[in-house]
Length: 291
Ligand code: NAP
Image (tube, rainbow, N blue to C red; front, side, top):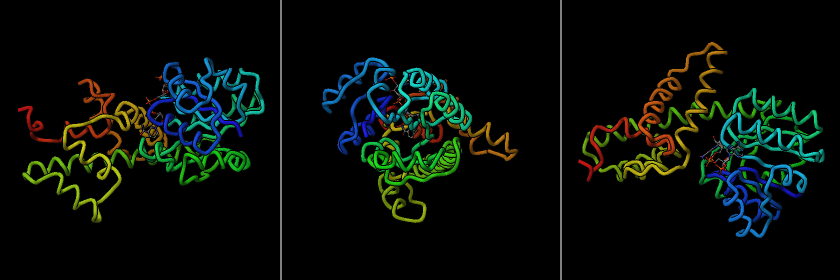
């Protein structure tokens, strides 16, 4: 199966490398073409200048772009490419409605679609160990599963189109809570004059240990906030979660607080930092060396 990747950002690049390693990758497209050219040189595959050109040469497209409007723009270009023997698996995080809209538009052109958002961070994308939440027809998933296994260690079918994105919203609410918990707890540890490296090491091995503490604890305590997962992208996800919670008439205090915190950080110019930059708002003292 010939696979093409659209969107070579923090996530898409790792996915493309793993697809190449497994022998599936035939071409890539990126809006900023230099990134596609560099990766194509590295992997000895083709960098296509347009989405239509990529779509004409592959059987499966895996897309990973930023937000709802971007997914719809990409899907529109694929739909108008004229290749009907195609399946599109979108791994971006967007709303349930956007996934349904993308599926409908592609179905009108006889192109199959799965919403397949992922979790596991840039580390998971690089290692090929992402957790993938899939919405759409099981028969289509079965067809593309071998390629998806090159980028994911866990693939779960959640239901019809949009169900994958609904599950990803669950994940994003949980990620917000974990970010709040880790940042508040480490700010507290700092205020107790504890050695943060030792706190992170010992707490990681106990009942409160978690992925975020293990992967981001050390860097945030050293005032390093390189993404990772950009704060502005999580803000975009939590707006979706907030709207879904309002529609379902359930309270969402964690989501609401995190949105307000992120909005403040974005206003201060930290939107392109990792979500662990939330620590900036929680710690009492500025980092050593800046006082
Ligand atoms: P990123 O590093 O900002 O990369 C975004 C990519 O999308 C870039 O290649 C960008 O192209 C491309 N793009 C954006 N708008 C486009 C458009 N209209 N048409 C074509 N290409 C477009 O973001 P990321 O961290 O890889 O995240 C991508 C998606 O995965 C997001 O939906 C995010 O929420 C989700 N996600 C991220 C993580 C994470 O830890 N980072 C984890 C799980 C899921 P340019 O190079 O031209 O800008």
